[in-house]
Length: 366
Ligand code: PLP
Ligand code: COI
Image (cartoon, rainbow, N blue to C red; front, side, top):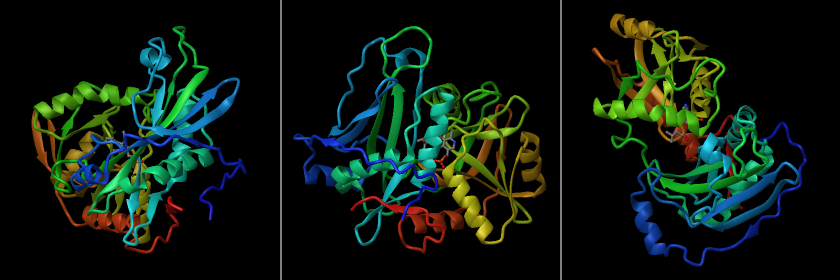
């Protein structure tokens, strides 16, 4: 089976594999997997592929996880020409390892690449790079409840050159990190800080691309959020419309059962959001992507027109929003059953506990 309707018939890359002689022992690995947290532990290997404007994609490797040597003039360090993805590998009960809609992440990496003037990695190579890493580090895919191996593909301008132009030498890597819940409270409702002074994206900017600069722009408001006892930030566009959280999309549930999600060219098109909305459609819910103003959100909660608000993304899966805080208000959010029931349906598919009707899973191990 192929997930690719744009199959280009490219020959697979020949990866040179160098095993990590200092790999963690099974006991050390088990200790990490017992309580993986999020994003702090890494597996024993990483994948890397070089690109140059003359040679295209070349030198695919699997090598020991470790520091990357970079020229201090590497363009990424100066101009932030960088993109990334986030995708998980799930262990099923029979021990097999699957990932979820990797063709979508591969295509989004290509869209991000286009916006950041980076080369487009063929989706076939993207998927192969995940397989290569899982082939050597499959033992790092945890099997505990809600645990997964978070895969982080990323690409950056490696060329040493201080002129401002697209780099002619680029590196693509994949690293992996065993993951539990993104938020400390698990699926408990989170508190969101409304960023009134700072935006993460603007018209014509890079908001729809998964590029480091968007996340850098979110860090100061994220610190503000922590100071106000909040877990995440929600951003508005310049016209008072809701965009998204620093690392998640937002979905509103209306009292007639319709699901509404902000749509704008400066929002990252989440694959979790798309999947959740599809599952809701399958259940007969109407789904709309349109602009949602902050006023509509606040008034809808006050009037009872909005009955649930939740955030969704690969790292956070589906997390209800319990409170929205601004400089001069605190709005408690209504919570209901739908977010958690959609979360359960999605994770049941991802972990192989329910039929994958849409053909979203791809088995990664051989
Ligand atoms: N929005 C932002 C800014 C994100 O970083 C993410 C996470 O990847 C998402 C939305 C959700 O996207 P996805 O569901 O594809 O992980
Ligand atoms: C993801 O969900 O994959 C992200 O990149 C978001 C980040 C908050 C970890």
